[in-house]
Image (cartoon, rainbow, N blue to C red; front, top):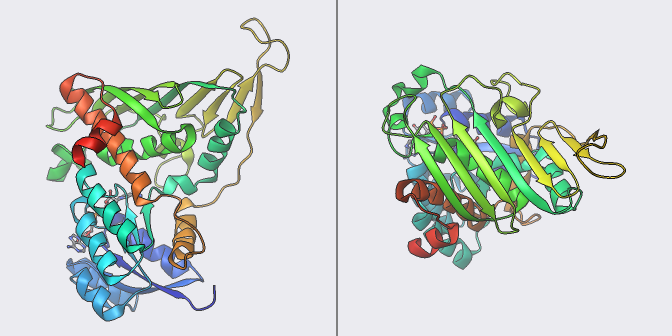
Length: 352
Ligand SMILES: NC(=O)c1ccc[n+]([C@@H]2O[C@H](COP(=O)([O-])OP(=O)(O)OC[C@H]3O[C@@H](n4cnc5c(N)ncnc54)[C@H](O)[C@@H]3O)[C@@H](O)[C@H]2O)c1
């Protein structure tokens, strides 16, 4: 890449600030401005010697950045992304792509009509461990995939819930956290065809769920379970096992087990279990490591976004793909509410 691409950020909160740090650290791009109505973000723009706007539309109009990172609250993703389409500005939209499947479908249609490049921030797909797990499954090393186990069990601190929306529907672990695991599992194992689910708010007593138990049927016929709770001291979550983000003390434990007819894989510990000779429960079981490199997936996502802007790479996570991940999460909520099996396809049809 020759000239530095000029990248702006809309929403300079928790994750927006991380994007701003990564832009500053990249040799291939520069910060074109920050749009965020908060006084703290104005100070941040000054500290970064970058233009500040309260409104992203004014930033798009005056700064004409090469790309915009949308890191605002979920309910603003659709309107901001549509404004990017109108301004012909490529965008990296934080996950979830939008707050509902219906609004995500509106965005998909606008992106398809315009051809403006858009990437969704399911950044874990850029983690080499997730890529290696996908290659192991898709490359047939496990034989035919039969069963998938996912755990997302951890303890959110009690003061996390002092923010009101985190105690209400939509602010809980299904839409905020499980969506990452669903996206990982879709990427590694293929699409989810059907879900059943139970949710509970017994541990914390808030309107929103704190615990959920899911049954999944994958399109390839494999069955899966995913158990979720944000109210338990436990090492078994992507956050605590992957080492992806230093704020979570890393634990040497897996959070997914992918089981096939020829072997099984623990992720992210990347231990492959199989029989080297005759297979059977009395035979010696071999454990071998699956190699993968290690780098920051958020930095890799930014590198990829720059390549998407100049159309050198197709988005690893398109708005259509992220909409299918969101449809699985909506299917989980719907299945728990109705006490019925729900297919993400049904959710997509109802929303269309
Ligand atoms: N990829 C990840 O791992 C990850 C992690 C955290 C958050 N996220 C996603 O990023 C988004 C932001 O989450 P967060 O935790 O950083 O939230 P946050 O509340 O910390 O920050 C949101 C920011 O948006 C600003 N904002 C509000 N209205 C705005 C507007 N009209 N225009 C511009 N800015 C506006 C707020 O002032 C705030 O600074 C969410 O969609 C969330 O799901 C992704």
